[in-house]
Picture 1 (cartoon, one colour):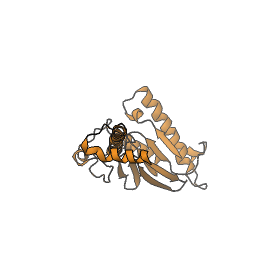
Picture 2 (cartoon, rainbow, N blue to C red):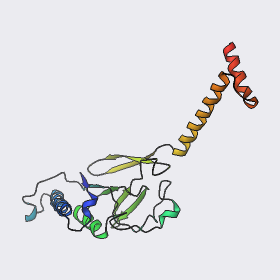
Picture 3 (tube, helix red, strand yellow):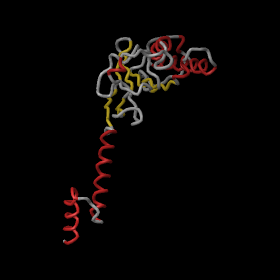
Length: 209
């Protein structure tokens, strides 16, 4: 099962949206935790709870759970060296420590997927819960955007990262193709200067054939 969390509602400032969202999350966590109990385990609190698929959930949210910085992150799509040691601001770059602990305590997720920082990172929470911060998918934010494809079952998951072409390489190919096109057009109309006579002669031979 997947749990989609509105990260903005985890500010913890007591706003109406925060209170409503937290109440719904608490109710959902109760259902999920009761659903994972063994049939022979008696619990009065779970007697009337709606039963959901008995698997540890996967947490999806925009903001990462609390971490000090990206200093421990590695990989070609992690933050650049000059940014890795910049401390994160709680409730701005990452969730607060309190909100992060609540989500882990409520749901005991088997995997957490997040974003926001525009750079990739893999961390372990409580020594066993992996969180993967997915890097930006936009060339506006990084030169090597990527996305993650996954295969998920009730008991396991497998993820594979796929990269898009480097933006700089795409621009280089476009520029080279554009320059070649201009040369061919000028050669076609015999407007080339001496250094480009080869292309002009090549086109002339092609026409003769």
